[in-house]
Amino acid sequence: MASTPELDQVAEARSRIAAHASLPGSYWVFLAFAGTLIAGLPIWRALLPTAGAYLDWGLVVLAAASAVYAIVRRRRTGVYLPRRVTSYPGARILWVATLAATGAGFLGIQALVDHGHMGLALAALVPVATVMLVGYMLVRAAMRRSIEAGRVKP
Image 1 (cartoon, helix red, strand yellow):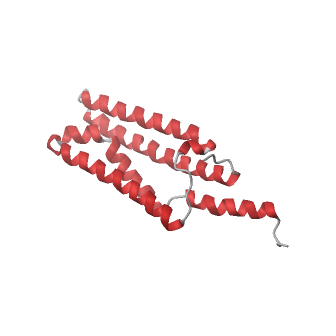
Image 2: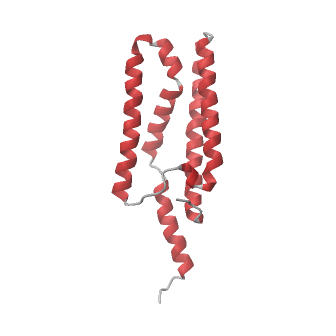
Image 3: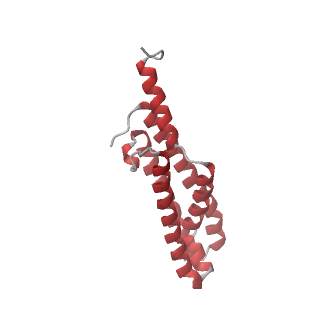
């Protein structure tokens, strides 16, 4: 007979698995850099018109690095959590809100650049990137809470 009740063992196992939903600080630094780069695409294209191909390849490299990181992390830890955010009930609304805010910010920056307000576009870049970063940090925290509560759907 185990010294720990079964329900406590289940809760402990869930919290150990939920720890894998958290990401290291270096990931968040990389995401802040990538988010600023992506949100500022209209600005970079306007300031550096000949660097369009380099920006496109930079995005390809960012996407490939993100995919490789996810695959390596899954294989290294042996924990295969559902990949879709919609599998985590607590994170759905935050994820949609973060996507909407980031998309609206990107469109706002695009409109400012199109109308020649480069200074305002640069000033808007910081809040848009911050909202994106904080939003995804909150989504990850909600994912962890959903795992700990046992409400993850495959």
